[in-house]
Length: 315
Image 1 (cartoon, rainbow, N blue to C red):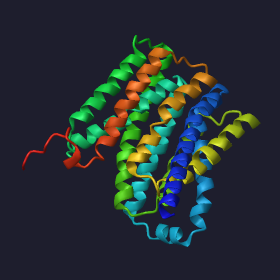
Image 2: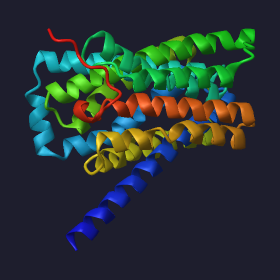
Image 3: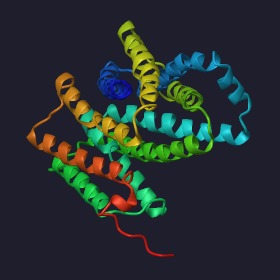
Image 4: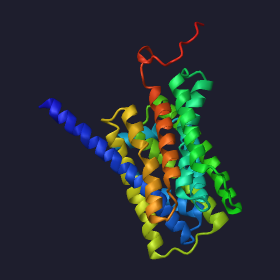
């Protein structure tokens, strides 16, 4: 009975995590629709994450342990969360919204999926993890997939700002992933506290920058509905469900599930945004997905069981 119950809980967690990736994938479509309705991109992003912060804040305030933990914050805790908020929300999310104003959703999605490769290369260069033949093979597959998807390269003048913003988002997202892992492993703070505080700081700063540089825009009921849905459902609720699933799923399993966003965004953009998805793009996405999956998962294999891992040199 216990095994059956455990298997059921595991299956429910997988389905729950897949549902979250679907919600996150629909965000890209909703963002594109909002931007086409002349929502200022940075203000749009700032509103989304500021409202999401306000939705998560009560979950922190009603828990005495969370309040006590925040009161015990050191100066270092505050500095680290400010940096994380600026990196992951102000820079990463702000750049994503700006990029989506100029690029197709599938193109930006593919660009951002280079993050696991950059993070793996960082781990290799900083000697935090050894390089394996399989990881290099995964990187090669991903680059091959990107070439298949993009070539022949044709960049319109209006897309250049989107590519630059996408590169900023890629670098900021990779950096915040590494820094976020460090904070979560070293600070011993509850993930809800880390997310709420960093989201509040990054979101409010992004909103202030957006209003100052782009204005508030004219928000109609349909646009408020998009912002409210993104904040309440696709951010606050999705975050809660994702973290609940992580109580059951392993890091390997969550990486596999998270990779489902790559094809989901491409398909949703094809259906709802009329973005092209021909055979060439589909093949490129498959190569890229397999390559990034190899890069993400291989480091979780025990070194003694990984026959493709290069042996470390004796110091």
